[in-house]
Length: 336
Image (cartoon, rainbow, N blue to C red; front, side, top):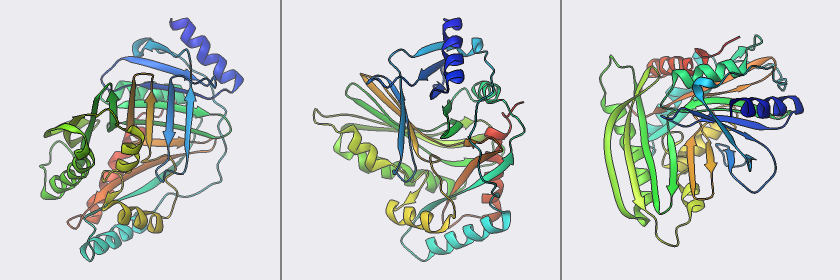
């Protein structure tokens, strides 16, 4: 299986066929999908603004143990026009503006993000991917490569939605701190906003259950996480539920429309697939994850995306520091 897996991946790289590698949370098998244009298992990327969705389908996906994943090759990456990272001064100014907006409106939370741009010093994406799966066992780790279009990699701890037969599950994940710190009212409220929002959207389902919140570890950080599940009626529309819950308050804010509009008007750059979602769609199940802790790779540079939830109690300096630490998820895994 290992040689078959490697040969399939090598062929995709050499023939410049779109492919995706991924490892699910708390599992140890790396899967490979290579685009074959069949109506079969597929891995999709959906943008934050819901204007773009792409997928890679494969009628014969292969898997290999992550301990056996050994592959290295150079990928032909797209070149990007040189741009600059969002500066500390500008980000803090935007956070201050966001806090003022929240304090003087009905908005309770807005998620503000920024990009960090570093030079691509001939980094090896396959070694970086291997580092990520080793460093983040509880995350969905992926490497998406579409020649001449885009290359993304990430390690996200956040499930958006899972449906298997008549059971629908999700999590409410929000609030971020280092292990040595205590939870504050700001993080507790932030996580409750997400839980309440999802619970409202799940209210049309049956036997709603909420467990948590509990503290979980994701890399260097801790988050508050609640588990939400319900049973789907016979006429359940998964696509409609996805549309209703994306983007969640964990990546957008609350109320959703007002926070979304503020982000588009003020953030100053296109999030593209960052804070969108990824889907693994099979015949009898569908699983979607929020695209967090991710980066876009170009021939000449790497764009790392980070952000945080802003509430009336937020401290701009601490928000900047949090995004600096979050950038380490990708930054610490990058390898030559």
